[in-house]
Image (tube, rainbow, N blue to C red; front, side, top):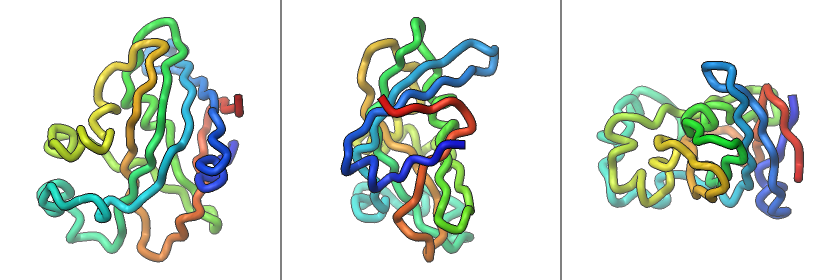
Length: 157
């Protein structure tokens, strides 16, 4: 399992290749770069927080946006949610955090379009750069110095 430091990746501007397979065992090849990692509440004035995240009041955590530029390098369109689901964060204690599901009224909101969340709900055509964001729910005491991990082939390009 390869770890990619979010803060170091943002500073360096590195691009990474991800090779995985979809639900039908078709090869999916994408490349990405991390352009930001920020709390959602810092730019959340346009929506009702509890309507967007109905279980928020039942948890003791914070929502973060991992901002990316992603390019499909496969020969055919790929379902972007499958690529999104390959991203997992890990903290310095070894705890891992999967992406928060962005469907329903989250994905249909103006906020989701403005912040790139909606770009992970459409097919990604080959050779086009998509600016998108992935939502993560993290513990309040979790450090912002996290790493991205994949259970698939990843390399720096």
